[in-house]
Length: 433
Figure 1 (cartoon, one colour):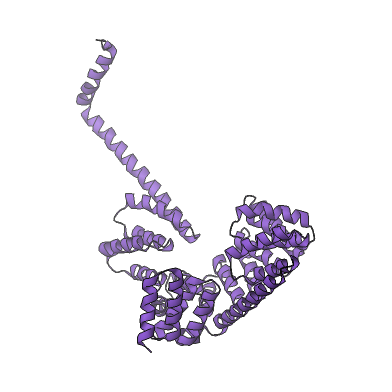
Figure 2 (cartoon, helix red, strand yellow; figure 1 turned 60 degrees about the vertical axis):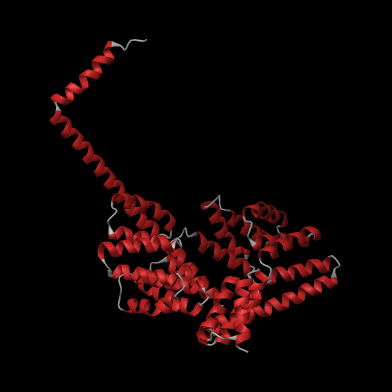
């Protein structure tokens, strides 16, 4: 058996003697170390708290959540931290976690004004838009300190449901409350586009860049709008700046490919678009422009493949349908081309009617089940299922026995293979005859 070195034995016996003789010193040092650890933990938590607030202000709720988890470990009984954790959870659509943190707030400090507000915002995001819009707008009118947050949440809910005029009103008021907000201008520009007012949208996108020159989405959209106007000269400087600022993002290269196509530089356009295509698997414009390049050079089989890829992404896209008809006609398949062209005309009429209703009849549609049904049916027809179902539900909210809505929902769920829901709506349809 190996012998333990005497030096090791001496060290092991010496340490306990020192601790017994210097017990008070050891206790003081240990206490100091604990205090230092607590202080460092508190400083780290304070840093994460500040960073989480910044993350939420800059629309990064997922990053805020893990930072707030650190804060909650250090301050598990802080109502303020639980409230912010509830907000971060709500903004990442984790309603269960949001309810948990709000419950902790109630237990720790009761139903404060801030907690009640966050409960209203949670209900808003859960779909109770009309039920809570009134109290939330009333808070704004009473100069609530978080009026911009309230208006942002309302605008998000309205935009999500294509209720453009209500969204526009909230965004305009948000800009009044916080004129420095780039996000408010960016969202209002999006709404202006849906309202058919591109010049106002372009002005708002420019306002975004005045407040945040590095705003990727706004600068890219300005370039895209210039390309849609067939103005590559105005689009090019924006795209070159984006490529310089964000060299790893594929979108500016794809749009530069579209720019080169408009400039007649087709070989460069093809190269840029083909390089971007695998990195942007759901980008409709890339595939449509690749089809146009191939059609230009009579590579008809490749053009058809690209445009059919586009239609897999958006089966009702009118631009892609018209292009497919052109490709089929060039390939001599005139009957098939004529059928596609008829589908293009049908989808265009449906889309135009839907846009008209959403722009010009939103208030009537919220109260008139027939108009809400028509919007919902058109949206289902062009493949916007979630929004179509929302508007059909609005029709039934106004008239629970509305026959066209029940029939549309029965047909929709039958196609989806949901026999239970289809039977439910058929049952209501048959009993109301």
